[in-house]
Amino acid sequence: MIEFDDVSVTYRGGVKALRNVSLTIDDGEFVVVVGLSGAGKSTLLRALNGLVPATSGSIQFNGTEVVGAKGAELRKVRSQIGMIFQTFNLATRTTVMNNVLMGRLATVPTWRSTLGLWPAADKELAFRALERVGIVDKAYVRASNLSGGQQQRVGIARALAQEPSVMLADEPVAALDPVTSHQVMGDLQRINRDLGITTLINLHFLDLARSYGKRLIGLREGQLVFDGDIADVDDDTFREIYGRAITPDDLLSMDAASGG
Amino acid sequence: MAETTTLSPTRPRKPRLRIRTVVIAIGIVAFTIYAARQSGWDWGSFVTVWTNPLWGRFWPIDWEWVSDRNNVLDPLIETFQIAVVATVIGCLLALPIGFLMSNLTTPNRPTFVVVRSVMNVIRAIPDLLLAVILVAAVSIGAFGGAIALTVFSTAVLVKLFSETIDGADPRPLEAALAAGGRHTAAVRAGVLPEVFPAYVAYSAYVFELNVRASVVIGLVGGGGIGRVIEAQRQFFRYDRIFGVLIVIFIIVMIIEQISDAIRRRVL
Picture 1: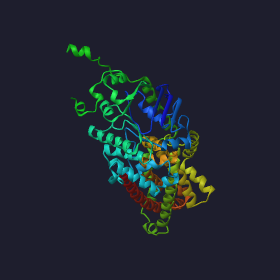
Picture 2: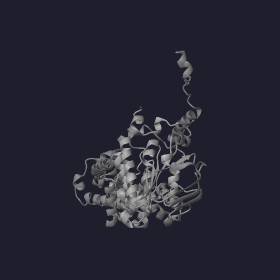
Picture 3: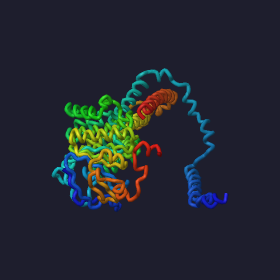
Picture 4: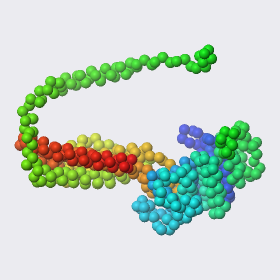
């Protein structure tokens, strides 16, 4: 269970990225966060795992206070939260396996991971994570030799290797083509259903949000402006969140992508 | 036509040469002329230097002396060994120190400041002076020279390597930290793979520098072929020194080729 209570984030330089956001997410939910770029989507996810420290308010993760957490306590929280990035964030010059094993860093002693002496159990977890995203055959290929979609799958496998209870995905398909986007979104949906991992995804394509989300959260200028069932969402809702009419650029569908 | 003139901004005039630029240029030229006068610079000596009878002593090369392995080959092997030991130990030390001295990977601010200050001081000491001091402090011969070169290698490589780390992609590190990794483990997993090829390439370059520097360090008592050159110079045996120089030239060329090949492969 995740509870944001009156959370604000102000960056150095005075930019207010989140303003008094309060929300509760139950275990196993599949939540899509939408909003214009700069609306605070990325900050919302990063505040939860402490990559961006919240300036005020409280963030409870399974009963642990994340705001102000440091050292071992913060690492423990992070180890339970997998994260997937827009630009994949792989160490491209090493193997897929080494990237997936990064997901085991929190539990493996530093001397072992530094020398590359990973315990067999952790390698097994990494292999299973790769099998789940269907690219186990690439385990010993250099990450830079994979396509964009394959690289994002490595990113998902890395997060799965953590055996997380929550998965954060920050614009996971923004760097991918439409077909690959749907495959990756499908992977995330399956993981949510099969493993019961609570999933929070930032998206900026509205049609993707509609076809994969269950619950929709809308952010506008750092404020929570919508929180509800995706079934109740219509174009007016999006207009409210975006502060303007919907354009083809907001849609991923083939027609829009090809300029139709 | 009328439409274009109203739509596009007017063409700018070519900016004039700024007065500051002109003043700086004149200043550099004036100071160079002054410094040349003060140091007794004389173009004529580029011609007259060749009339010095010293050059006659370089020829014919004493190949018989050069080809005796006690005279050249063995000291040269010692020089090579100094360079290898200094490079390997220096580069091993530079790997962790480089990470401490980069803004991206340093564990905290105080560590960064202390490491950077110490490295700046070491780099500010000319390597030859370092050799003179260490040879006096440790021992005359190969060991003193090797220590001096090790310190020198570490300082050079730390500088080059830490700047590479500064420019490395921070995103894999973010991912490793997001997975709950400790700082050291996250740097190892997220940054090292990205900068390791550059580290290998720089190490090859440092080895190249060390082969040349180890010759010079021998001149001040650091052992190896430098000591031989210095001894022969005291007896004015330039015919032998010329022979040694040719051998060194060939070896340095070969090592540069190998080092170039390594760099091309990894980068």
